[in-house]
Amino acid sequence: MAKRSLHKLTARQVETIAKPGRHSDGGGLYLVVKDGGSRAWAFMFKEGGRRREIGLGSAARKGGVTLAEARGKAAEARKALNEGRSPIKRRAALSFGEFADSFLHSIKAGFKGKNTLADWKRDLEVRCKPIRTKELADITANDVLAILSPLWLTINRTARETRSRIERVLDAAEAKELRSGKNPAMWKTLKPLLPKSKRSKRHHQAAPYRDIPGIVRALRDKHDAADTTVNLAAEFIILTAVRTGEARFMRVREVDFAEKLWTVPAERMKTEDDPDGTCFEVPLCDRAIAILKATIPKDAEPDVYVFAGQWSKDHTKPLGMNAVLHALKAIYPAMTTHGCRSSFRDWTGDETRFERDIAEMALAHKVGDETEQAYRRGTALKKRRQLMEAWGRYVASAPNVIALPRLTSEVA
Image (tube, rainbow, N blue to C red):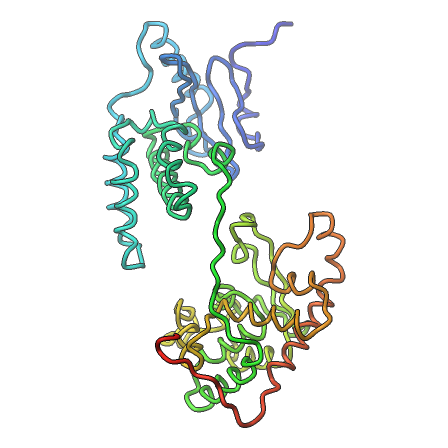
């Protein structure tokens, strides 16, 4: 029996298909199932030698367009094509610039940074000037590439931010049914078309590791005098050698006191080298545990922040972005929070016999290929715990009288 060219799907299949992708009913009609489970109807056709796609509405099980209704809409579209007319409703053909301006106005109330609105306007008005007059439905990956390519190897961070904002505008346009089909600004689409950028490594100011015990002693003295959470947070970051953001957004539920272990969720471990992210287990020395017990309120809810902001008595807001940095610089001007990780790494290499790989893994750096990482997983935590306990003992080794070198303002 010949395979049917129309009406390939059944009503039951439309309700039960869960596999993401386009599922053809024939004649250009597709059921589109996305990764998140959302479902929609789409009609695909060629116009002017280009493949085009129009949305025919949601295919949600309740309140969505039924299979019969979608087939009716697809039949109308095919009729229009046969008569030499475009099935696209031109009344919705907004330009990118018109929609981008409207979209930016609708979201700007949620911006937190002082310069965020100016950055968005710069990208959407200046960098996106070549596509501002183009209709939303006509924008292609080549259009986005033309904007990104001149920036990609010179100011890569700006190029990435611009791409992300274009993608968000086009996602919003799709949500309002002003365009359909794959977003041409998606990273997955553009990645194979762009050269690999060489990013210069930033060198963060770091204190010599010999000064770290004195710095920690000074932090404890300041805490004893003022009872401020930020000094404990700074000491905790030094003891664990984590990134500031990983500690600032630390929640109570992430700590296992019985195992003396802190598990950082995957979403906070995402980096440019590991965009998918994986959770990271941080072994805690005795002093780190003591800091957590002193900081976390009794009967604290699992989702509250461990290190709360200055005015957040209920721990529902985290420490400010630069609070720890300012606390450290008040004691030792020539250091940064990220530089604490450098101090730890230098100490490990100079003063201990721990393998290089263990030191790198303690900093959540990737070591070896996937096979090697899987093989080492079982022993790394035990060795890393030994390393962090040794670091904790070293950090606590300051004598009672501390003489910290203070840099002049010129050096700072």
